[in-house]
Image (cartoon, rainbow, N blue to C red; front, side):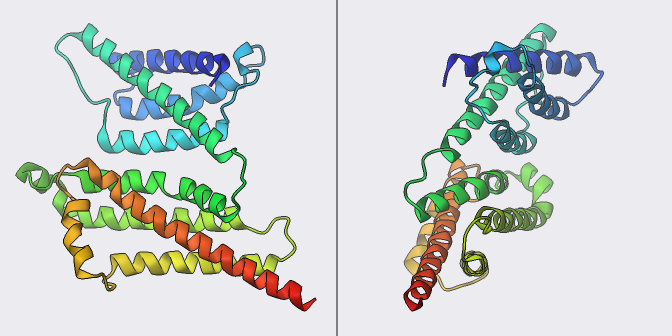
Length: 280
């Protein structure tokens, strides 16, 4: 992180926070949960295009990863509504809203910077780096959504009455989102753009996706799981109890399955290419 990044972040956060607070409290746009996501996405893109702004020189933040980080926080904000609060005093409400907007905007840019550095790192470990990249693209958004659903405390009768009837539909939708994002990432990340063995790479994509689907289907739809593992499920997957662990363990499990699928696909690809070269 450098001075330009912090200057860029503070300028964006101040502008987004001030405008959103004014619009939200004025009643011109009643829902801050809708106002903030739009401004938090658009304002940094506009500021980045300012030609005379010195902080745009050598800015280490990629706008693509700014948008990716924005998507994380938008999913989280819609599901947890951190902006829906009021206070008896209007000035206190305005200050609280401003501070929350400011902090979230800073977090968006920090996560964007972290993603920029992570995905632009030196890739020295071949298939391991590929697995890490694909995990980084496929996991965050679906599992923020899934974790937010599993976090809901259905032991509370009022919460149960509000959410229980739609929970299965929401979980199914979350699974479809995860499926769509994962398959798209497999295709676009591994697509053979400048390699000689394009047919083999296409086979690897199909194999990787098939392995990923098979492992997920095995876990989710009744595949054999040893009894001692099943006995641990209530502890490590405390679903619908308001336990934040549901954000962690499903993510780690899915990351492991994704990594295994990518690495097996890479090993098979290398084996086929090696055999083909031996025949030449």
